[in-house]
Structures are given as structure tokens and as C-alpha cells.
Length: 336
Image (tube, rainbow, N blue to C red; front, side):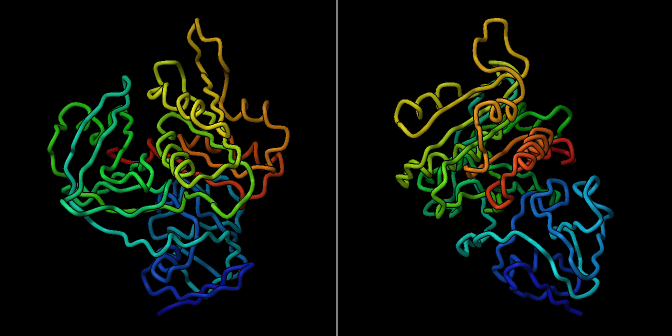
């Protein structure tokens, strides 16, 4: 049995087949719905269920825990009737094909005490087509997946760059930090995600990153530079202490090379000799920006940072269609 989905306010319609989530059906039919984790944790795809009924085969999703009863998550929602959803639509990612490819670890670079940068090489003559801000999955031998944002711009695609943070007790990141060697062969699947730039907008851009949330923002910023986008761009990068600024010189180089770019690092647990901004990164943003609703805002990082920033920006009246985010679900990703 299939069910009809109607999206508001656009009026677009598509069919969901038996056993299929709303998001999977939308992707299959090139309907542009926002999404991130695809597992009900990040809340990127949240929509309002105006009519109809859905079920969640794996139980109530985490991202709905504190949401009103009329909210649903298309990434894990299975229709039990025809549905009417009030949902933000995004441009479909140019019909980019999701591919499964082998890759070789070309280089491993330890950038900080808990961050490594991996450079991955695809088979000869192969390139991964993607949009700035998207991510790939590693597909492990047991069939499980581990998601990481692509840190290089689409135009610089000879190698795939990833920033991987070590997660305490995480089997995969333990292995990456202690056993992974150059030339190791891995399998990846991608690209995934709708955390991409609105290149048709004329608003200034505000980037807010926490920890390795810098990775997709780096891809987006470098893509904007390549495209010659001259709108004002500001990056706020929040970490605990100076040692967590794992690429400290790169944003400073961007600022020197591009007059329309500004960089503000923010430390929540500052070192004694730190004379820069202190506190939570979203608070620094709101201290500096009188009217955030004038901006397109791109955020990536830990869920607690993204949630705090989302709440604050919504209270400031920023329209939902101007807020784009990718919430990194470290704790919830078993075996990360």
C-alpha cells in the first residue's frame, strides 16, 4: 500500500511506498526536504503534521522529546494514511548520485590531541561529486555506518578531506586514532545531507561552528571563495581551549586574503593567557549581531551547541528558512 504526501505551502505531492520513510520516498523522487542524520536524532528534518498519522518503527525519536505533539520527523516517520506536512523545502542536490566507492587512506594528520585529518583517495579516474556542507558514510564490515562531514570544497576534489574527533569509548574513532594506517582501504557511501549554501540569496552569511563543526563550514566557505561570492561572511568558531583550535591559522589566512571575511574564535574554558572572546559561541554571536534576521546562518557542531543557538536565534525572530544546521550526534551514534 502507498500513501500520498502533500507538502505545504508548496502543494507538491509524492507517494510513499509500504515500508518506506517519508524522507526516503522524497529523496527517491527528487523532492528537496532538509535532513541530516537520517536516524531521528538531529531534528534537521522536523516538520508539522497537519493531517494524517505516522508511526516510528524503532520507537519515538529523540529529536521529538521536547517538541509539540503535531511535529514529526520525516526521516524515520512511516505513514499510516495520506499526510499533509508543513515542511521547509530545499533545492534538491542537483540530482547528485549517491555512490558506494572504495577509497584509500592517502594521509593521516594529527591536528590536535583529539582530532585527526584524513585524506582519502578514490580509485584512479574517480571523483566524488558533492555539494559544500554534505557528508559521507564509512560503511564498515558489519554493515554499520559512520558519518563524517566533507571538509574540502567541491572544486578541490582530488582527495576527500575529513576531520575526525576522537570519541571516548567509540570503537571506530579508537581504531582511527590507534590503528589506522596509510594505504588502508575503506568503503564510503555518499554524498548525503542537505546542509548546503543558499547561493541565490543576497544576505550576508554567518557561520557558527563548534569543534569539528568547522569541517562542513570550511567546505562551504572555500566554495564561496571559489565562486567569487562577495557577500560579507563571518565565522565564529567555538571550542573549549586554545588547543582545540586544531587549524588555528587557516581562518586567519582567509581573513587576510578576503576583505569580505571575518573570523572570531571563542573559548568556553579559556587559557589564562587568552585575550580573545570567552563564553559560549552563540552568545558571542548575539553580542555582536544586532539583527541576526538579516543573515543566512549556517551552524555545525555538537547537539548542545546547535540546540542553544537555534533557540536563541528563533527568539530573535530569525526565519526558519534562513537557518541551516548540521547537528553532530557523537553520543547517540553507538560505536562511533
